[in-house]
Image (cartoon, rainbow, N blue to C red; front, side, top):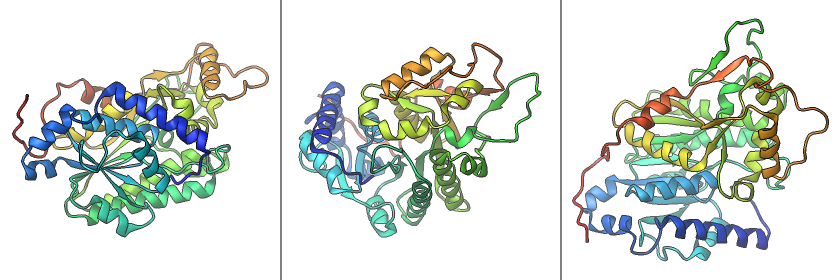
Length: 364
């Protein structure tokens, strides 16, 4: 959010975004989603309007694309002029609203701008997160505090905005896995599921700032929503990968991998494809009209071999570790076992029309 990049880096990212848009066709002028939106009744269209923060990020972009494929109107909350310039350079949907996408400037630290951005939307997807302006260290303790404060502001703005009924909050698996008081002599692995929370003191002691930021942010989000009419769910994805993730998501990825050797040794290092993460956001959002609630862990692959970990580091351009990589779950029994059955059950259920309002559709 608000990170300055070189001109060449920005141009390369724009080209990659353009290519992805053309591939999926979701933001193309005259696309099916835009035609359906144009033919919908005004009231029904408003009932299917959502706002996405961080819509130009790796995860945010995928969520926006998925929402458009499912026929939603999307309002992009952009924080910097750079984000707006990036979208203009893509030249994919021209003026606001032409293809079901609107843009609005909103600062996550400014409650009033958030309220204005959310006003008129039924749902909010908070996917934005802080990144390292230097692009090297990945994350700092100060940034963890800022992210937590931003999360609180976003959820409070959702509560304050009368039209907003639902919020999907992007957290991280790292908010679930870091603790220091697990027993070492258990016969069976300890289950890590949605009921598990990372220990903030442990994160501080081990300088796991990215995990600290995600844990603090999610806890403050739940606190802000408590006792209100806002429906809140959180998605806790593993390390998000997918086409172009090295270029488009390097800083969060590097920050995520701090402490990776320990996660690898304990069976806690996992990845999640960005398309699956995006689909999870939309499916959970739609299921919130029914029984969906609480937290959802999202991953599709647990890294168990040192060779796979080395390949992951190579993809991110990280140097190979000196010496022997710690024993992995192929070499010995792990103390932990990740569970994502809650999300798997929801994703495997037959998809139903769960919009907040039904609307007439005419096909050509």
